[in-house]
Length: 314
Image (tube, rainbow, N blue to C red; front, top):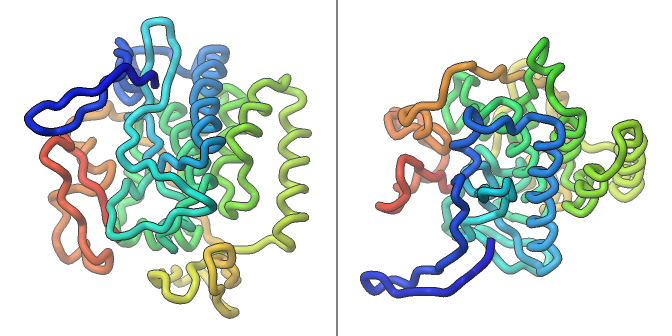
């Protein structure tokens, strides 16, 4: 997003940027055909290029979502809203801040630490948003925010792409991008530059490329690991069908070192049109009873200009 200047409005510093006339992607799912093969490829390339540029300058965004991607009149898509972006050396530790949990990587929910691989997970959720034409992550799980976060951390809950006739119409590169970006182990996720490489490859090369990345990730991280938070992180109760054993890690790299039996719950996508009421559930529903909010420390009220969104602080 091009910076053009700044201004002081009512004593507040405001940044001025180029106007992207079509607005944010979360308002375009049912207006523009974002799933047309070449259209999606260009869109995804724009987004991955923007994220790769940020990471090359040691910046993590921490709030990647369709609502923060903006389209110009020529179809170009840019990354905006840098309110949660931070400079990083290797990782950024969350300190008494709030953030959009439904787009947040499991390891960041567990440890409150963010890395470039956390942004890659958020990219995967963006691709899911596009595939489902603007549905809300985990919106159909039927669980409280507290329980959803616990199950995400334990790898017992993950959004899934549409299936059946609708699923067959998805661009092959979207499937590849989604599955690679939402690898549970951060070390197994590609970089934004590698996602660009995938997008530029011919379709028949995608499977080979994904296999090569997976093999490289396994050689770096050792044997496959399952995911549980480290000691000191918020404990998550596994479902009755899961068994938990082993010790716990001491740093964010080993937050998932304890062995668990994965029980994946598929979240199917509703076909309902997005409404103002449902938008409020993107972070948390303000009508959620206080008892269901326990265990998250608190749910921070959004700023006055934050629209219908609330953000969870853990």
